[in-house]
Image 1 (cartoon, rainbow, N blue to C red):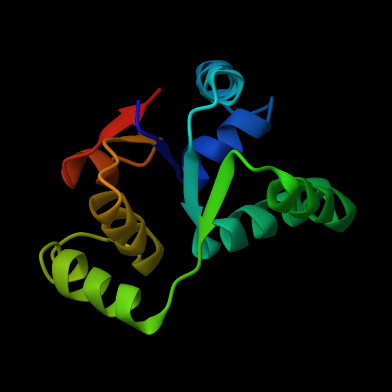
Image 2: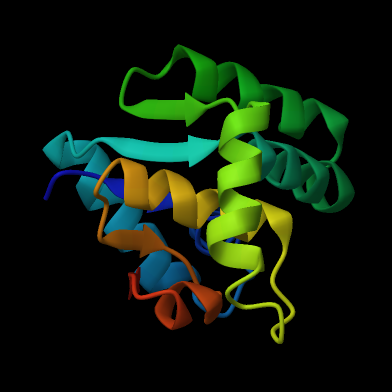
Length: 136
């Protein structure tokens, strides 16, 4: 496996025991880390994760998450610039303008396309709609 994209929906489920899909999400995430599979996300997803963790676990927990993330070499955070954002708008948001697709998802799809990633830790059905495989 060349790498996996971490979406907020699946990543939060993996880290949150109270979430309905926690067990399969956590198992996949843990296996990828143990196997050294490259894990890729964007700073937009990281911002969503920090918001959710702050809301449900408090600010201290969200800061621990950020500290851990940026110290872990298995996780790559792609920082979104204007070029990447415009490509996401042009390729994904325009194509699926009849769907309720977020800019964060469109950028995620563009990063996956550019990095040739097939799999995403995602519960969001939009990933399948865009042609990617969701895990779990």
